[in-house]
View (cartoon, rainbow, N blue to C red):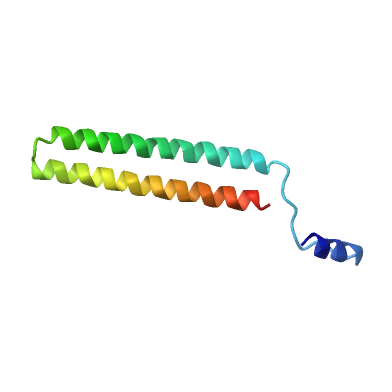
Length: 94
């Protein structure tokens, strides 16, 4: 794509492809810290759900709530990992 940008620049037409801001690594760092915190919270909730499952004492309502906590925490962890991969891919290709 660099060749196309050079051709357009030499023709006097304004560049339609925006350049990457110099601080994109800072933005990427903020995203990675944010996703790291979310991932850590997801792992914490998996542990909390496991603890609630153990102390439920066979109570069907308690085990059901604990299972829901674990499932939702794992879904949150998967979404966080996917979002991190997408953001890193997009910023890596800039």
